[in-house]
Length: 276
Image (cartoon, rainbow, N blue to C red; front, side, top):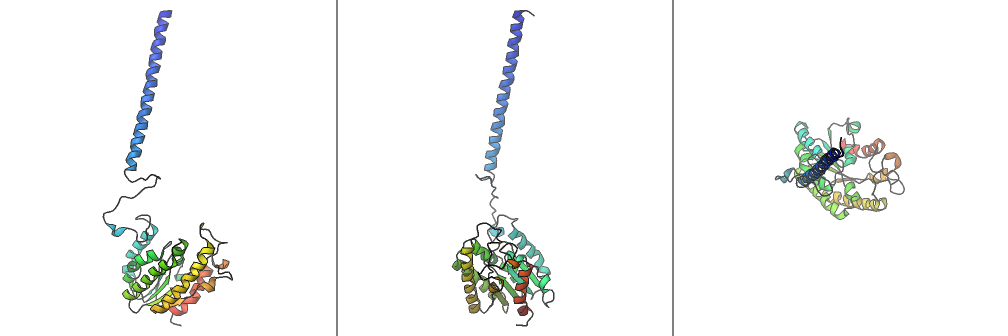
């Protein structure tokens, strides 16, 4: 091949390479623009700046989680939905335990199968006085229990909510129960102590929660006396000399294990079977 033809050949090769390079650049720019457009589209369809997803607002607010849950499939909502399914098949005039995870984990058949009345568990993990107040109808009123056992307040205190505010909601719960369930026997349980040495939940300060729990328990006792309910003080039965939850009664420092739940059973069962 002559030098003239070689120069032409090299020129053509350089043009081809340049064209391919330009094509790659243009393709890359197109991909970047497409990805950017997709991100913008997602942002306008519910994604927030921190990458989380906000469900679109529902025109009907009636299905919104009563406890401020995270969405239509929150544990709170799932439990409430299960109650609505169960309620038509349950006997009325029975016993209902209502509260948070301490109650939720209480396998009632293990402790009360020998009672003449059925025991229904309406505890929800993570619940507070706000959640209980908002679900009284589906948890209690619809099945018209003759006896209600209420233990609530731990999560209010752990969240740093004021005891006075908590007790305002607690009083509304008690008033609602007596108004909608005439003749009901109401047992208000004390809030149990905690143990930081067993604590698995970071951020809970025992030095803060213990005096708050003791203050709340005294106010629950006073409220129960005022309203005609029965106050049952589980706190001293599961607390050590430092007012902390006895290690043998809990595996995590907040919830009662089987041994701890047996102490609760021993305290309240004589009331439920009519011995007291």
